Image (cartoon, rainbow, N blue to C red; front, side):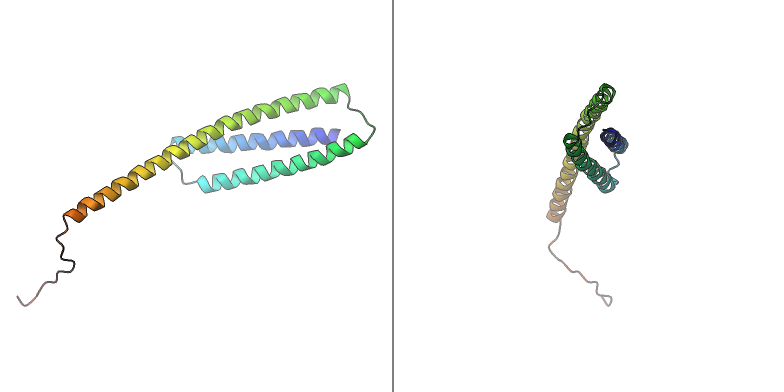
Length: 142
């Protein structure tokens, strides 16, 4: 049972790290800095991979524990419940952050689209002033 408790704590540790990474990137987004987004997503993916690996080990440990005859003590049960409550808190915070991340990315995407449309309109306007002669050369003798 101690191994399960250790794994649950480890999972919470990585959830906290995930939350911190989100928090740091949201601060960059607030400052209008989106240059780190690829590293941000790469870091998040690595943390999610670690959390999945812990979940796999938890499933294995849980299966072994169910097959054994050892029972969970009231103290262990209380500790597990506290760890799981904390995990739920982290997950709720992360989901809230992810909504902010998505909102920022959508807002920035809309800004880029508006900017591209503006550039396109500007090019069309400039083409309207074009004389039609593509290559004019100067005659140095004249």
